[in-house]
Length: 276
Image 1: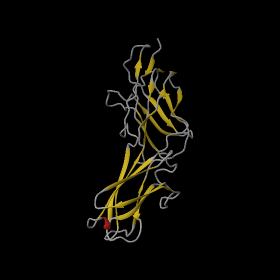
Image 2: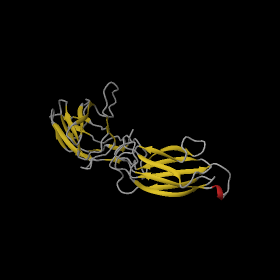
Image 3: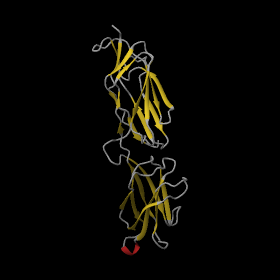
Image 4: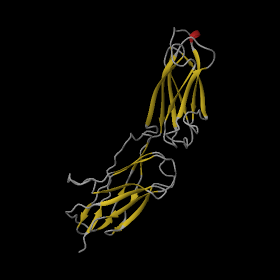
């Protein structure tokens, strides 16, 4: 009977960020401006965020000086989208008026829609400035940008037979692409003597990640991710998507072994939006 190698495409998923929250990732920076600081009346902070991500700016602030409403300071907080150059101030999303007191306060500004098509190298900007005049006291605090870093899991149908020496390309995701972040895949498979009995021999496959332009951006020749023999290279494919170009991604799988391969289940890559 012809030997059959069966892919058990049960996939061990490596989750690279916390899932389950609309805004699963964040960046926090401190700020200060006014008398005794580097900035006299205004300060901004920049935040690299993957393209296509909705963001929220959470600003905590308070002023120095004695208590009393007469000493409170009007300020303006601005959230701005990325511009065409990193050192330029982009379009205004929203400006919020506030009154700085000796007690810490919080202002949150949300962006809407699908975020910005400009990605990690063109940052979002939050500016905090005096509303009027030149007050006598400095203002300090933190600015946190939260963005949609939800882990995305994509099913890949592994079906049919892949004969020895044969290759098969399988599309995954959709034509919108993955924007910017990290794709990571592991998969388990084993040698099989019949349609129901696993065989004893480890099986090597070549799995290539192909971008929407048809270029192989990562290629791995390895054995199953759950291979018990430490001297054998276990399959793990990781790739950083740096551009925001849309299009269909694919996996090209080549049977480099001497036996045929049958696909029985599904593989599920993980995509994590990220600038790191």
